[in-house]
Every structure is written in structure tokens, then in C-alpha cells.
Amino acid sequence: MTESEKKVRVRFAPSPTGYMHVGNFRTALYNYLFAKKTSGDFLIRIEDTDQTRFVNGAAEQLLQSMNEMGIIWSEGNYLKSQVKDSESQKLVESKTYPNTVEIGEFGPYAQSERTEIYKKYAQQLVNDGHAYYCFCEPARLNEMRENQQKEKRAPMYDRYCLANLSPDQINQKLKEKCPATIRLKVPKDEIVEFDDMIRGKVSFNTSNIDDQVLLKSDGFPTYHLANVVDDHLMQITHVIRGEDWLPSTPKHILLYRAFGWEIPVFAHLPLLLNPDRSKLSKRQGDVAVEDYLAKGYLKEAILNFVAMLGWNPGEGSVQEIFSMEELIEKFELEKVHKAGAVFDIKKLDWINGQYIKKLSADDLLENALPFFTEKDFFAKASDEKKTDDYLKRVLTVEKERLAKFTDVGEENKFFFQDISYEKEMLHWKTNTSEETIASLNTAQTVLDEIPENDWMLAKIEEKLLAVAGDKRGDLLWPLRMALTGAQKSPSPFECAWVLGKIETLKRIAEAIKKL
Ligand code: GLU
Image 1 (cartoon, rainbow, N blue to C red):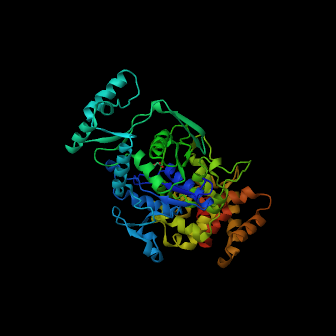
Image 2 (image 1 turned 90 degrees about the horizontal axis):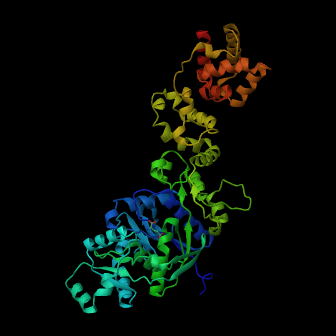
């Protein structure tokens, strides 16, 4: 079967750390989009062979975040809570992650459960002369490296064990259970070349590649061996991963060659950068998808933003807002950029704002409520300012300027608490107290005429504008100040509408009393 006829199979292969880095999330998303676009399979493989980095609950957290973000895989470990009963006959209990089950023909999907497989393949490479046992102790390796550093040479294993040990000596050491690693015998001075779907032709000289350890003395594989063996056994056709893995790819290609296996297509995604073009790091802001969800960014907006970190539909397209369906339709791996993608939080704010604007009042409330309840000004507000109707009015007004839900109410606390301001603030330009009082009286009369059940934004605006004539500032400035006590706020119509008739008239009366 030729490459183009084969069913696409891609994988997301995280080493769980307890949170979903945005870079990893982008890798998962692009894999998912590519699989969807090509009607291929998308699986999750948990790369958990580095026991020193094991974090309890991290794998489950990762599955949870993927699920929450709507990136659904078709094979691998699933949270039990995720799986429907109708699928139960295909489920296999996970040995390592008790809250998960596995679905798929190519399991186990957690690498820590596949160690026997890796051992077998490492042994095969030794038998075929592509790999060799190394019994060097850490002390010798350290000394070797220090010497190489002093001589300004790249650290490389000096092949002591390959050059000096006879088969009998090796067998003897193995019998004595001497700690041993298995190293790949990297051919010297060969060019490894491959066509990366994003980066184009990439080539490496093997002389710069160390004899990689494939199997560690504790019996666990290194990333290189496990990754290649699994990509082969799981019939992965396209390896889509971050550019930081590019230096590993020639090593992987050497392994595929040594095994005599077909080499998958590679696509290395551009690095994510801070605005100063340094590599995206925690130091300059949040890097976990969970952090952005916690701050009140909508998952559709995060998804949209992350999809555009290194990709756009090209050909003069100015579209910036994409639903998942549109992304699936328009995404092309070939159009992913080579250059690093800047993580610009202002862009995320803008995209999130676009999604917020489109939410219905009910959805706004549902998203905003958890954030309101964390606010001090909300906790202290009276009960009538905590009703669903009241909050929906606040949100309807705020949504035009809201970048994220953590900001709810922050710019407009006057909707929730008593206000205080200097009476001079009530004057429009050089108006006198008498003129200001007259304006407030007019506003009061007009608003009082609107029945409570007709307290609509359009009505309030229409009535006030009708009496303001061409002297809008004279009427509207004192009114806005009386209602908000703030230099900046939504329009007085909106403020009156949110506050409701009773509170509006009360605040106007208080302002008049001040003057
Ligand atoms: N386990 C690697 C990671 O954490 C996977 C890299 C790859 O996709 O090959 O990103």
C-alpha cells in the first residue's frame, strides 16, 4: 500500500506533568484536526517511562483537560467517567491508572506497561549488530564527559564497551547481573535526510549523534526506543510534534532503519515564543491551559487562539474566529508556519471578547457566576443585586468590553456597592449647582414616568434623549455621575437599566441632596 492509500493514524504522546502546557495542547489539537480532516485515527499514548518524573494524578488530569477542551481521541486511555456503557464490551481496565480504561487494539497505551516489548526489540537490535551492551559505570562516563568538555568536544560515548568487550566477556557480565545499558550503534559520517511536512528537507550528519542509550540499566526504555517501537507497532503514519523534538528525529530514523521498518511522515510544529521572542516560559505568564480556563477564558476561545499559534488559512484570509467545525474544514498541516509563533495574550483577550459578545444572557450568567462569587464586592452586595435577572443585566452591558470572566464587575463595582464621589463631579463643564439640580430633576421626572414593568433600555434611552435635546452633556453627565460615581462607566441609559427604577431614582435623589 502506498503512503497516500494508507489510513492516517496519528498520536498525541504526552509525558504527563500534571497540567496541559499550551504547546502540548496545540500539538494535540493539530493532530486531532489532521486526523479529522483525513478521516484518520487519533490516539493518546501516555509516555510515562521516566519513573523519576512520575506525578500522581497527572495522566488523569491530562485526559480530563483534553476531554474538557473537546479534543476527543479514538484509542488509548479514557477516564471511566468519560466512557459510555454501550462501549463497555471493548474496555480493558488500566493496570497503572485505576480511574481509566483502555479502548483500542494496540494497547497497552501507557508505555510503563510495555517494558517487556521494548526489551525484546532492544535485544533484537543487539542480535542484529545495530546496538550493543554498555557496562560503563557512571563514574567512568562522567570522567569521559569532563575530559571531552575540557577539550571542547561534544560529549559522546567513546564506545569503550563496543571496542573492548568480547562476546564471552559480555555474556559473563550479563550472567553476573552487572548493570548494563543497551546503546544504539550510530553509523558514522552518514547523512540522514527527511522531508518534514512543515520544515521541508532536513538533514543531519550522524557523526554528531551520540550512541544513544535505548534501554536503561533499570530495564526501562529511553524515550527514543519506546517512541519508535510504539509508533511502529501502533501503525502511526504521521508524527506531528513540537520542534523541540526535531534533534531526536535523525536518531529515530536510524532506529527505523535498523529495524527495517517503514518511516512515518514527520511534521515538526514551530516553537511557541514570548512576545520578546524568547521560548514561552512560565516566568512570563501562565503556560497551562487549565490556568486560562481558571481565569475565565472560554474553551472555544482558547481553542481558536491556540489553533492560530503557527497556522492560518492563508491566501489573504482575514478570518480570525473559527469554530471547531471550521478548523476541521480549513486546517492544513502544510500551511503551518516554520517560524516561531508568538503567544500574544492581547490576541487571546480579543478572541475571547469576540466569543463573550456572542453569548446569550443565560450562557453569560452560567460562565460568569463562579467568578462573581469569588469577588468581595459581590459577597457584600445586597440580595437584590445577586439575582439572576440583575446579573444578566450587568453582563449584557459588560459583555461589549469584557475580555475574560475574571474581570466581571471589576470596572463597574457601582452596580453592586454604595457609591461615593465629590459633589463637584456632578457638574457638566462650568455648570452651576442650580443648573445641575435642574438637570437631575428633569432626569428624575422623566424616569419616574416609565412604569417599572416597562423599564427597558431602549425606552430609557428614548425618553432621556427626547428631553435632552441638543444639550446632552448637561443632562447625561450629572445623571451618569449620580448613578455610578465613576469617571468611566457604561452609558447612563445602560446604568439606569441595570440598577432598576428604584435604585436609579434613589441615587438621583441622593445626588440632588448633595448639591
Ligand atoms: N513524550 C514526548 C512529549 O512529552 C512525545 C514527543 C513525541 O511526540 O514524539 O512531548
